[in-house]
Image 1 (cartoon, helix red, strand yellow):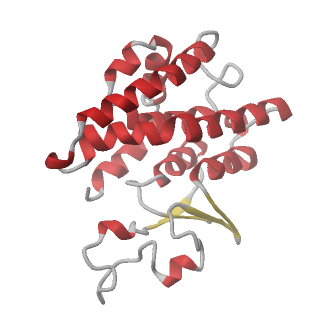
Image 2 (cartoon, rainbow, N blue to C red):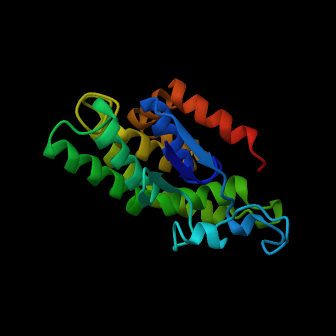
Length: 218
């Protein structure tokens, strides 16, 4: 059985969504981000990203990690591309060109959008009240307007970035851009992006993942 190391309140959410879309049985091995623990060295501390047992799996000390019958991978976006190619049917590429496009859009999400989207989430929602910084959030919104326009144009024809169907690329993009949703002004200015992410997040597998996130402690 596939083992996924991490928790739903981490980038493992992307892989949980993918696994549930495919319908694969998997074991979620809870690994907590070390920064969330008051004392990671305590005798009763849970398995975390600096635990030796986890470092043996991923020496980068980050979740998620995937073990597919002894084949170990890290990096959530790459894990999804692997799962789609091996198990995903139409969630994966039909040919080399689609394979290239799925990789391209996943890397685009990571390089063009993720850090800025996280700035929005942190400074409008996640940080303690005294550390919310609307100026930083506004700067991130401004920086994301151009990438959102690029994605809006790419979605105009079919509502998807690869072919005319929902694929792993949509999951990878939607999970990165979820961080930007506390900036509704970005989505109102890009109606194709807004309709697309609403459709992605209406899928049963997304709701199953989101329920797992909600059940975990913040």
